[in-house]
Amino acid sequence: MSMSLIAKTISESATLKLNEAAAILRSKGEPVIHLGGGEPKSKAPIDALVAAAAVLNSGEIRYTPADGIPALKKAIIRYTDEFYHRKVDPENVMASSGAKQSVMVCLQALLNPQEEVIFPTPYWVSYPEMVKLCGAIPVAATPEDGSFYPRLNDIEEKVSSYTKAVIINSPNNPSGAMYSEQFIAEIVEFCEKRGLYLIMDDIYHRLIFDGRKPINCYDYAKDHSENSKLIVINGVSKQYAMTGFRIGWTVANKKLIEVMANIQGHQTHGPSALLQHAAVAAINGVQSSVESLRVTLENNRRVMMEQLNAFDGVKATPPDGTFYCFADFSAYGKDSTKMSEFLLDKVRVVTVPGVEFGMEGFLRLSTCGSVKDITEGVERMKWALDPNSPNELYIGDRKLVRDWT
Image 1 (tube, rainbow, N blue to C red):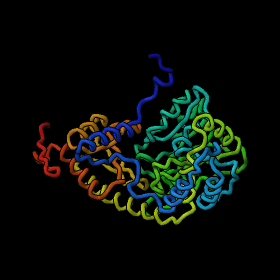
Image 2 (image 1 turned 90 degrees about the vertical axis):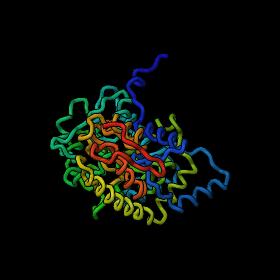
Image 3 (image 1 turned 120 degrees about the horizontal axis):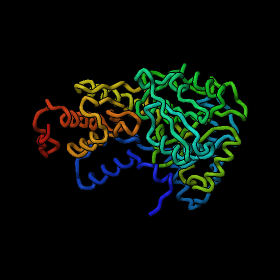
Image 4 (image 1 turned 180 degrees about the vertical axis):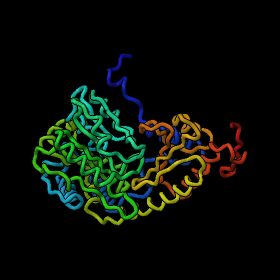
């Protein structure tokens, strides 16, 4: 069968592949602990559920405008004013079926073949593949100091005559690192001076710890006109625990939004009417669920760090936000894919290999689950990886015996 050149360059999503493997094992009754998940376990806000039920009960669920229903655009405008102190018009806003589609359509609107997009390492697994889907070239910028925190020089050194855009995801998936205010200020100024598009993937911006406050990229922008190349992407999936609702949005200059809406209109049309109304209710409703989730995740981070700090050979930096911890397991193996497969096979713990995020030897561990899952999951991992562990381990009533060294 003949496939396109682009199709041949795209790899399967590592996270979706692991989710599928875990689901199959669970369906067979296996005691799987999922430390690879990218979705909170708390329930969606009641306001969202009530709104969705009301629309569903009406039976009037029809096509929507390609760029989103007016009520959702109005809610996003209010959200942008509240959290970014930026007043925008409806023509500056487009709703999509998840922030992932927002990023994808944005890149399709911007990129020509062979143009380049820069993003810091570690990076979200989909950024390189999304860029390649546009026939363009992904360029990873690894911090020179070996940390998770890029400096402007790290980005600047990767810029070429083909560079079209920079993507910044802070707090970052997978590391949980929240980039410094100085870096955000510098990258905004740098992109404005160089005429580069700056895509701010802010999907985790309210899930931050230790009293930190979200950093507003608009505070450092000098160009607030319709020529601005600053783009902000967000959504309801993470902060409202509404991953399955698949509603995200883009705020950008009107011309870009117009082009993005044209593209999206031919791809999927507008997002689901039912789910857009649910998103409106979440954004405009009581916000206590966001803070409750944030507090839970901060506590889960503490538990995860306690477990990893007691794991000899593992190096882990406390995340500043999100619900991930990106830990260095290279003392136990340089091939993170083999390590993830080994852990799933031997002790039924799902992790995500660091190579998918641009850093070999690391594993991404999720703090979305319960404290019990985190504690037992890391204990199983330690038993499987540490040669000094006891020879036997009980998972429920099942006894496991080490048959490897």
